[in-house]
Image (cartoon, rainbow, N blue to C red; front, side):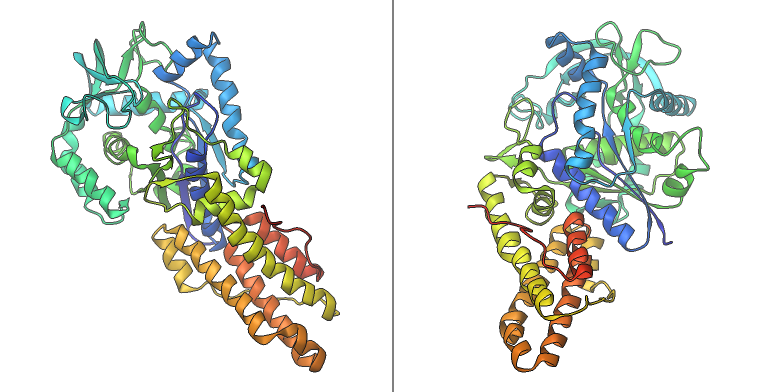
Length: 476
């Protein structure tokens, strides 16, 4: 067994059904997790749901539903993604579970014991979308840059604050490491944010105004601010704080740690969360990988805007692996990209119906017709182009490499014409078909992280020496 590797997604709010934007994030993480397992690493892959906070509390009240029943319902919708997208995660953490609540309270105690939590009255602009106070200097045309359709509200109350201002120097030391944040321009963004001056941030809310949250121990007037609570999931899911010698020790303390997050998470994940770890005296060698957003007609997909696309409807019509491949190959990992069903369908026909599906059909028809026994292909080393792309989290380029191999193999069939050669020179023809199967097997292996079901289908076809039926029928 190789090294240990821990990868997480952010936790989506459970105030609506899953949409294609979060599917992109979790499929990216799943592709990386499967790749690492393929290399022999022991992998722990975690995701889950963020179930506290004002947005959820308000949404449940608007619908006249009990808030517990509300979050249970939508958490179940996100858990459906495991089968719906063929995900391989090892843990699904819900922030309302007793263990997670206890972990958030334990981290609070550690930060308080370190002198980094204090209480004060505060008046400021508050973005309900981000569930955080914002500075006037951060506004764009009077709106939060992440929620331009929402009016910030002025809130005055007494809260607990975290002494973020004390961690500027240590955060800059952390961010100085080139691999701490990818891509590099997101790391530079985080550095500029720290250098502009850090303000202490509120980590609680008055219970009388918003009761749905983790209780602050020793103060029954306050509940934890949702970010302090939710960010703790990255270690609570590993058994912290009770079981520090188990998964927490193996994966967090001694493994490679990668957290996948959206670009709007830079200040939360690479600044606030890192400072909380420092205050709690918890080792933080984790890397942060920020992705762009899937947009719809140029707008970020948003449940509040109502422009979301349902991933389940796509998989019902096209299958799971075609959507996984599209999200991995045709959505750049670090940039915003528009998603349209027309673009998806075009890629499906080009990549799968006319590409991979046609290739598998051609080779396995030759094998089924002309080979008496199934070929037993041998594993081959993973190519450097493929490994290098994954090392940079450029999974789209790793997928592009796979398709370059598919194109080359289709061309080889056209150039060598094994269907003719096997008739004129049977031995050479059968040998050529065996070589084609070996290459097809190698392609199936490098497709495993992207299209696990398809990879198994190809392996089964090779082992049984039979052409699979209707692998990727064309969609007109």
